[in-house]
Length: 518
Image 1: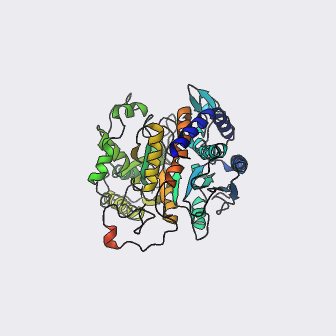
Image 2 (image 1 turned 90 degrees about the vertical axis):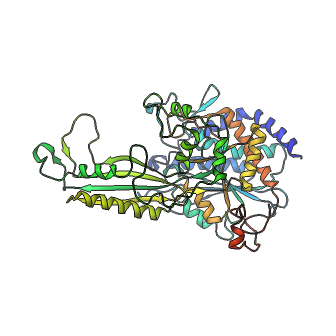
Image 3 (image 1 turned 180 degrees about the horizontal axis):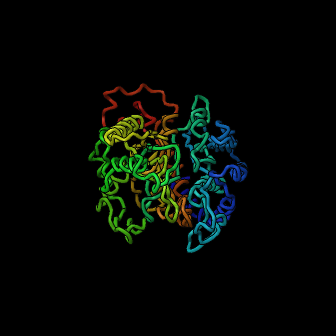
């Protein structure tokens, strides 16, 4: 069937099926698969996995609930399985390209008394918006892949590529077991070993109206710096003026990290930041973004009405491609209502850095620790100080000109009538790097939800129009992947490019380190 004929029939089918989609999303939202509380909600996560498994079986796909390779979490609680599924292209499936679509079926905690206008686990439609926990993060996008498969079945159209699904139930709580599973499944002959492209729809548009593709994420190094002055809390009236107080030291340490304009004060932090290229700068010019709207959306306009940068390019670069240091809080200090005259025995300041290419978390740990040790030494305090990096992940940066992105861009253009913006994000999605490092194949972040969907917050919603267009884009994306020329990246065994050839602009694309042409 010609591509245009398929698109027309596909769009009509999706439009006619919206009532079914809303009803099925309602069934999924009604399952409170909250991964933050495994003792109570592990059965719900498994129920959500089983619900999805049965749906896949009805569509004729192969599906398995893989026992979680980690077994239990750090508290000894059983971990949920990982769902693996596959739908093969009807003809010459071994020669067809294969895409693996990742999503998660767990959700953040939610309760009406938290400030929701409706029951978070009852999908509620209002003004063409679907309110419910998990509606946009990530059950709506996850089910969209099933609706795409179902549409091909009902239209009697063969899948143009092999489609694999990898859905987890612990994303909101650290993805326990997923990283181990990816390593195991990427070995020769494993579930992921023949995957040519990955696609993830677990982030959001920059704005509310313009679709985008995301090609970069910042990394994260999270720290705790603690100061102890005694074995127990002390009375400030009885003992104030007699001891070197831990809070006083900690405040000085925290203040030495960053100034009020956002400038990082730790020497060496900026040394490894990749320079901005002219090509990168051009990507910011056409992005649909307004600083004034940004202030209103984030409830800044009514308070300070001031941003660290007042023009679009500088603000987006500060948000996406430069490192930042944020102070998060102090553990062990008095933080309740009223007044408490206590000298805390031990306080721990929590802060983090968002990392960018080419910063290494190990080096960040070194320079931050050395900085705090020097500052503390200069205080000449007799107290005990300790610095710990609790975890660290590097940044992820892809090539927006990679064929995987080009396929997603063409699909987006056919649905929306214009090319998507190319964006980076300030947050991190560690699973993205895990897929690329284990398989050496490209990952495309293809968001379908809007910036105002309120994921993780009260009144999370998914616009019906985004649901419809999201299914349309993901469906056409499969056909655009099939149209790519060249061999399967996962099976290409050509002679690799030399170091000199790799230096030619555009020569290296992850998954094609050779002379193949797509």
